[in-house]
Image (tube, rainbow, N blue to C red; front, side):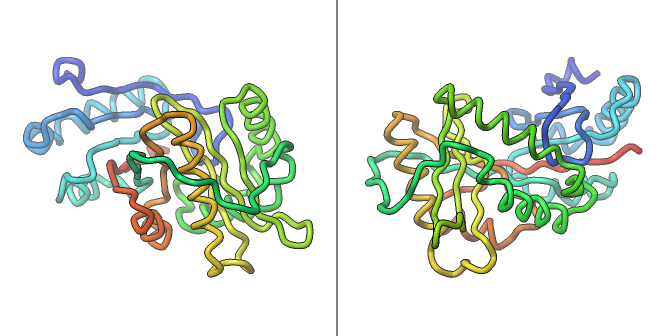
Amino acid sequence: MITNASIKYSVRHSKITDLKYKDYLKIDLSNFSYGKILKNFGNYSAEFIEKAKKSNLPQIQIKFPYRWNGFSEILKKFNYDTGLIFVEKNITKTYLPPEHLLEIKDTIILKNLLKKQQALHYKLNTKFFEKTKKFDLDSYLKELQINYEKNKGITYGIYEKDKLIAFIGLEILGSGIYINELFTDDKFRGRGLGKILMQAGFNYTAKLNFKKIWTTLAAQNESALRFYQARGFKPISKLFYINLV
């Protein structure tokens, strides 16, 4: 049984997200033996599907260590697809804040750029992410606003002629800082704006005495992965999923 194998699992109900399915069974294999999972995954997979169906959950997500070479191919044989990559960076020094960045006080300003970002997510993986027009962007912005007003995060933006062209959203989550958004308008890419915003993220993390900054990327977004790795981030985990309906 799943519990006897000490595999962590949980039922998730996400109200505001750009994921196609808001309800899913989450399986966390991060602290488990690769050898045992490899040997018995056929049985585990059947149990996962049975448990998800009993709870009327349309999707299963499996998170596992990035270092598990070959496990992705095994999951694909069981009809799982690539979803996300988790990356993180340890902060061991103080970073100077970049100049000419403005703190964004009203999240409604982010709306147009977030639409473009969500459109990119959907383009990368139409089975995993929701169509932009179906994403409850207004509720998401309100949730961000509440977090910022409670000092649970911050957003920095870069402007050109009073127009927001790039931003980074940072959130205090667990024992680190989570980058919930980092986006540059297409017309202004190649100017190093992402590097400037990331520097702000490092500074914010160090200023609050956190030791880790992390985020998730669409697995198909290879250019984003290269960008983060160039900034010192390391891939930690992968997330694969299977849609049951």
